[in-house]
Image (cartoon, rainbow, N blue to C red; front, top):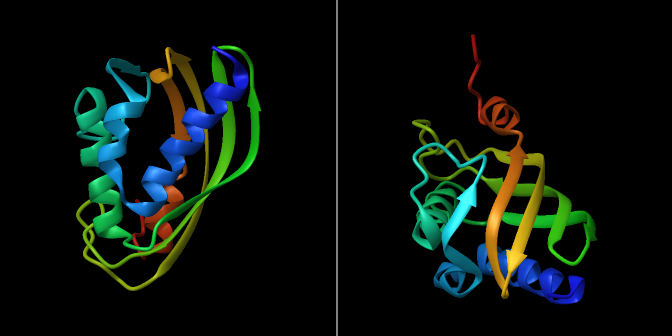
Length: 137
């Protein structure tokens, strides 16, 4: 695949998250995707991503992911992003607080045949928890 095609698939993935049209992920994620850094309780395959982002959008209904920097080659797309939203629903056992969050993250995605097949990533989960008022010990 070309790096332009990979970037296009990654952009569609982001659009699905930002719009809440998460069923689109079934067309963008391979059934046997390998996630090296899954979210807590994230299940396998496209449905695992749908379930995770459904939880995130329930917690932060206005959630947006903005790509700050992106690089790509013939197989991979790597990017840094900023996640923003307002905490209105349960997030990791914390009921909605109405507080706004802003967190950074990075991801590397590997594609084959127009689908995400492997992922590495990290988001500032501790920063999110602090912003919604959790005081970790």
